[in-house]
Image 1 (spheres, rainbow over the protein chains, first blue to last red):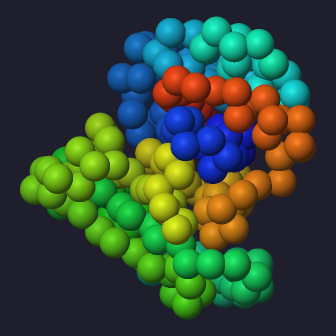
Image 2 (tube, rainbow over the protein chains, first blue to last red):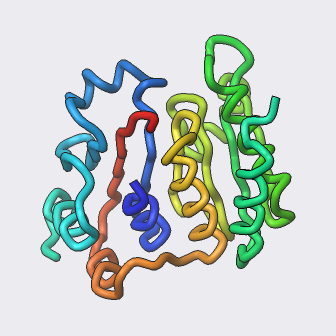
Length: 68
Length: 141
């Protein structure tokens, strides 16, 4: 969770939302949540589970078409 | 009734004593049909009482359309953690349990305007040139 917010602080183009899904149950279906944390990137792809910093940034960059 | 007990309050107060700069917690709420809005607002107010560097601004999700649009809020309860500017840090739902720790960390990062990420991660992030929206879905712990 922390990483998304940290990324947002470091780059103005990044927005990081923490969403408590039990308070927004309709999102469970919309984002096919089967386990948490699940990080949805630009509504188009997702990261399952908590990843170490280096892997997380790599996957985010890959999702938006940049290489780490 | 307070959401933070005396012991938590003392710990949080000590933790926030090192805040480098001002932080504004901007909440979006409404009276009806929002089960957790009141609790969220209360939590933010309790936090602001623990540091003179933290302020709270409360907006009505239905009425304050300009602020809703400005911060890009689409559901409530919502909390924006803002430092010298809006970094894009949002909490939807009440950050309790483990997410309360995330909130404290977000407050400290927003106050500093930087994070403890590794230099190589920061360098990689600097390469992002298009908007990226990360939504981290969590459950209470």
